[in-house]
Image (cartoon, rainbow, N blue to C red; front, side, top):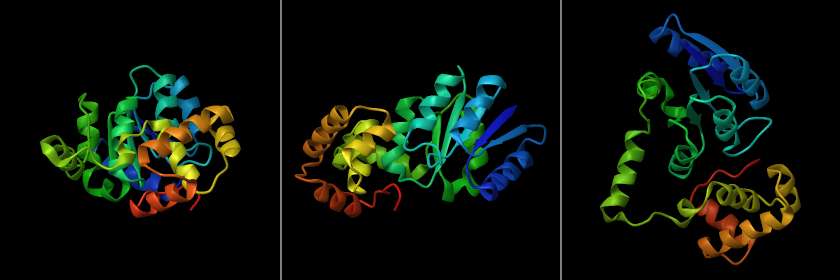
Length: 212
């Protein structure tokens, strides 16, 4: 079994590796600190599972998941991140990831999550499963940001962090017109009138803003 650890903090990578090797002593654990390094590995090596952080020095948002899944057919991706679980987990699952695990739960849940993913299943925490069940049982549709697409959500966070449309467009490899369209949709779905309203909304809901 070949597992790729895509994480830019060496100490955390080391901890993950130790947890995995205790359970699977014969596993091969490769490491990458950037998305570029990870893509090189999955394109040229038979990687079975990638453990992926979303916050990397050479990319933002959900790009690591989509790029890795395109790079190797059949690759299983388990996201480990500090980002808000309720906001991100459903999005990475829709992109094709096999699971989402908050970093602060890794010590106790990593092995079980990996076992489930390798068996062909999907993994989310018990808390998130309960949250989703509450919504299905009449708890409502959740806050407005949970209804945004992955791209809209990424634009929301960057606008709330004070970034200009032109800068967001360059970072997302989109035209400024496309980003402006996303901004309009976000304002409508959130019920906001300005970028300042978006910033207040994100702070109120505890969303992690890039670069802050």
